[in-house]
Structures are given as structure tokens and as C-alpha cells.
Length: 513
Image (cartoon, rainbow, N blue to C red; front, side):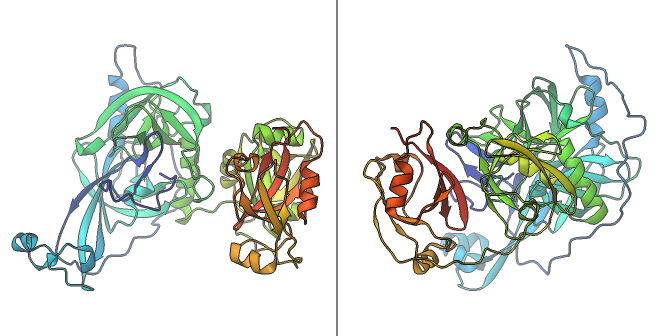
């Protein structure tokens, strides 16, 4: 569950090995849960087992094209078929703490001993237990679940609906998609067939099956509320998000469980909820089966996931940017290319708008990332793009690793000045020393030294320390040059190429306000 879980909110209790992140409308929560306890210092940890087999994924026997009985009055027949393939996953890990993290409390020492004496620098360990769900995808014991359910675990156990419990091996995990594959020593297990999630439609009935809050297996019903959702952070944190949204009630502990259609097919792996309180409010998210199928196959066959890399950074095409470029507001705008990367080698340029990959429309930057991420390195893809409002197609052979950073260029002498009081910013030419301090490439341009917070520049998102390199595709090196570029008569906003730290971004500045 991705958006930004790198920081744990100390005011919020831990709910598993993932974290919850605060949002203005609530919180995105990993729908696993925590069973925590303290213990004396434990021994050395065990290693995580590696891949045991590379057998292909098979659909359950007799499942092809089946229709499971369901009516307006009952889904009992469907549940009878689906429930045995959904399991409970419990995990355990050791957490090391220094005594400086423990309270030096005489009352606690009286009841619990010297672990609360606060002996600074002496390490302590405690055990944390996680709870989630999983889906049996092969009769020989392969189980699909969420990465955050087993992340960092030393021991994983799987409990079937018939009460049998197995120790599980972690075959492989993939944090960017939040998926993991487990293996138990079982045979002739009941499985779920994976549906083609691209065929799922908004409004379809969906059932969520899992073990919420550890109360036991539970089935809830709702509809598919939306498709193609990204809950945040899909670019910066390296995650791949193309969620199916559902109002079928999902709570903590449902992570890794099944979202199924009325044919009893797996359409998604339940992964996140959006909630201000930690409980269900009817906004849940599942990883689509097609993404899960691709990741699962690679984890089973290789133990890891390889993804193609186009070698660009992109941003959404807003309505203002579309007006500036005289194009429709869709696709992904290239704001930088990795030097020597696949896209640069194929002739893509900064300012291109990517509209399709192999004929599949690119809605936005997230859909581009997901489409490319499903392909292996070395794959040749047809990239449809708009350049100067004209469509063209370029063949790109995908890479795998980021290219090296761009080389520095020489800067000029500072010649500062206001870029126009009506726009509300002051600039000066970028120097080598300023570029080093700001952590930006020395490509020329103008560094913003001040922004009036009530101005059009502030409304456009410009900040002190930003470096403006281009206006409408033309490089600017002096305050007068920037002023002239912004003063051009046009009904469209000016399109600025801005360096902000190591990133580049296009911003629009209204000329006519």
C-alpha cells in the first residue's frame, strides 16, 4: 500500500508491518493488522527461503468458463466455491530496540523487570505479529498475498478454512506492486481462477473475502466503484498502482484476500482502504488480477520481478499545459530524459507528449508507468507521441537501469533583476556555486530568488530556489529575456521548464491575469 509509508505516524498505533499515511480526507491504510507482544531477547534470525520451483501457473481443474450459482437472494453457492481458496496468513518478526527507546519507569520495572531500567545502548528485542489473508492460486500450494503482510517477517504461517495450518516459505516479494508469493507443502488445494481484470466494468458486483481484524473468514458484497485508481506516490516512491476501487467492506486483516466476481473468478487482491478512523467507510482498493498475474509469474519463475524502463520522467498534461501546446489534455508530458537511456536513444525529446504505447492509450503519467512496467527489458515498443502538435510513432527498445546523470555545463555571471512586478518573482542567472547549493544541474537558466506569495508566480507553483530554464521552449538566461518571453501576446499561458532539485517539471504561468 503505497502512497507515502516511509514515515510512521507516532500518534497512530501500528497495524501490521506497513504504516498508515494521513490525508486531508482520511488515511490510506494497509489492510493488514498487528498482533504485538513483548518478549525477552531472541536468538539469531532465520533466512528467508528462496524459490523452490518454476512450474507454470495453471487454472484450477474444471474451472474454465464455469458459472457459479448466484441469485438476487443469495450468493451462498458462490461463497461455497470461493471460500476454501482464501486463507489466513500470520507472520512474525523480531524488532530490535535500544534501551533509549524504552521508558525508565520504576512501576514498569516492578512488574516487567530490567528491560524497563533504561540501560542506554543495550539492545533489546521484541516480537511483532502480523495478520492478513491470501489466495491459493495453484493446487500444489502457491499462495498470492500482499508484500506488506509478510514484509520483514522471520516466520510465516498459513491457515486453511478446514483448520489445517502450514509453515510457509516466502518465494518472492515485490514492494512496488505490494505483492508476494508464498509456498506451503500442500497438494490438491482448492484454487481461484484469475479473471481478465481489463474486462471488469464499473458497476459489476464484487465480493471481498478475507479475515478482517482476525475475527475469522468473512465475506462482504458491493460493486466495482472505479478502475485505474492511484492512491498517491506512484512516481516518487517507485510503486505501480492501477487499483480497482470497491465499496465491498474491507478492513484491516483483509490485505491479500480475494476480490471476486459473480463467476467466482479472482479480479483483484485487496490491498488498501481509505479511512479517517481505520475502519471501513466504503472506499477500498484491490490490485487488479492482470497486474498480479504478471508479478506472480515472475516471482514463481525467477524469485524477483524485472520491468522495462523507458528512461523518461513525465507529468500530467493539465488543461493549461494543453492550451500552451495547442493539444488535447491527455497523455504524459516528458519533462526530462535519462542521458543515454532508451527514450533518448530512440529520439524522444523533452516536451513530447506520449499518448499511446503499442496502441494502448496513455491516460496520464501513472498509466504510462504501469503499461511500461509490465514489459520486460529489451522489449521493442511503439511509442505514439505528439511533438509540435503533430503525431508521430517511435520504436523504443526498453532498458532496465537508469542512465547516468547529465554532465554539467558552464554558467554565466550573475546579473539579477525583477522579471516583472506583475508576475511577482525576482531572478538571477544560475551560477556553478548556486547550482551546487540547490542541487540542480548546471544547464543555464535563471534561479528564482524571491516570490511574492500573492502573485501569479505563486499561483503557478513557482518557489524560491526553482531554476527556470525555458519559456515556451526557448532558453532564458537573463531577467530581461524572461520578461520579454512572458510579455509576448498570447491567449495561452506561458509554459515554463523548471528545475527543482534533481527533478524537472513543466509549470504554466498565466500571461493575462
